[in-house]
Length: 319
Ligand code: ACO
Image 1 (cartoon, rainbow, N blue to C red):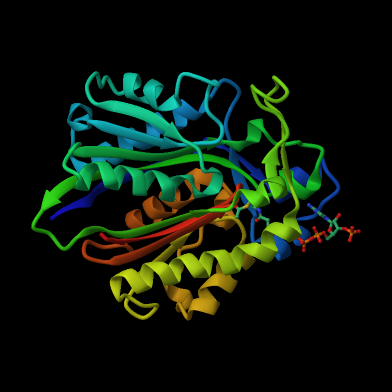
Image 2: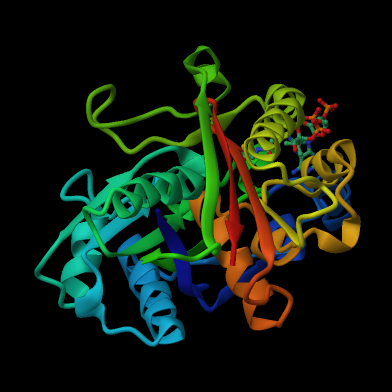
């Protein structure tokens, strides 16, 4: 059988860092409140004119360099984003052109914070089917552009960034994507949404969220879909080496890990420095843990995400 093996990963964060103290100058909040409720201390913000495709391109170039691959070897790009450069064309095709790729195909995928897990699962299906050979799977967001900067209940939570992973179809290996599990339930669509769009208001709109409602559902959904991944593979909280969750909120991460019995030292946390970068948070965290030497070849890595829709999902990767 064919497996989708991770060959490299990369990340990009805009240079501007916005701290909680910076935010406290413009909205009625404090560093203490934000840290206590979310674990977030700072986030990166894209500069004017810096678009999602720019972030995605920088992360993709780093991922290709890490893989030791030429862009021309890529024949599939799946870019997860809820903040595309334009309504169309897909930001993925801008990245494709920016990398000088003229073969294969590229498309965007929208599952909000679960976007990277969805994109990884979709790319994996194209590779294991034998249809495509090498995929760039990207999560890239400029959530700063859809935040209501006067709403303290949401604007303190998010940040901008991008991460990318190169997957390659390989035969006769026990490495790669072992399993992925996707879920959604549109009955919850009103709990976390953007109040604009091309077909509804003709405007871009702003992010709106019932934070408590999201929190209430998050841990159960996350742990359910991780149990699916464990059941499908026979792996457990003990056998995984690293847990790389979507970075929404420190309390959700800790509660999920604790409920599953995952040891705290196996949990990769970047939300303190990155905030919630939606679809970018998992590949950004993967790049951090790969670059600081935590994730090593052969390690078993558990991914999980939950976001607007609701959408949620999990994946297990033998790195
Ligand atoms: N600074 C200071 N006070 C604030 C702030 C702020 N930034 N935001 C809200 N408050 C106030 C509220 O107005 C409220 O005041 P009141 O009691 O006088 O009405 C008080 O703090 C408590 O508000 P709650 O919303 O009940 O606070 P809660 O403890 O639920 O924390 C939070 C809010 C952090 C949003 C929490 O609900 C949460 O983490 N929810 C999950 C949402 C999430 O992570 N979403 C990310 C997107 S989804 C995803 O990626 C999974």
